[in-house]
Image 1 (cartoon, rainbow, N blue to C red):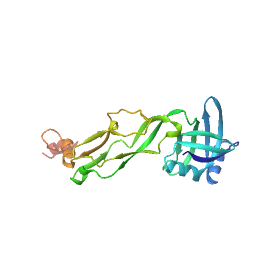
Image 2: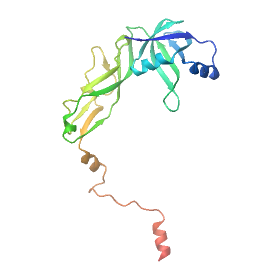
Image 3: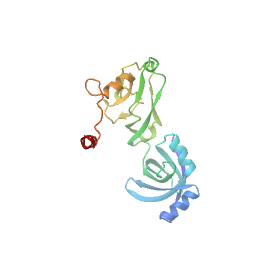
Image 4: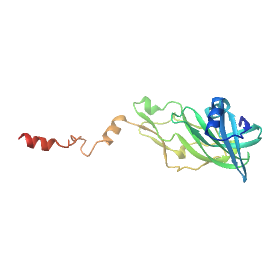
Length: 208
């Protein structure tokens, strides 16, 4: 179900006005797409925060503008704590769209219980589906993941009519032996050579 955002038309533009809106608990936004005119809006910060927290991609705009829209881009401050601006694109519920959603691992891997280390390589995935069917996240159970096993995006169980857009061969999750990881980082022979200290040779020659 799409999250609802109360959209107000925004007449006064500019940096100062945007700051004023944010201080008042609203986020400046722009709505575009489908060959229609761009519309400057503002939406409640708390409603947007809830939508982002739930992983929602599709939102229903109500108020001065009534439309279905896709959250296209979110601009954050340098600390990643406050939303500065929101880009929305018009979309119909039956329209097929390409979006990125998060991957959430569920369960306990037997390989970890056997002493292995879990490496979660892909935290999100690109999919294509109807706008009304965008999942909040893709859950992946690791209850059968054994030590030394590698699973790829091809192992994801996607909902019906959801198409994978990323490389199916891309690594999703691994369960590796920690010692094996350390050995992979060593040069041939397993020995670590002492790094050369620039200037040491010259200093030793001067001392001699």
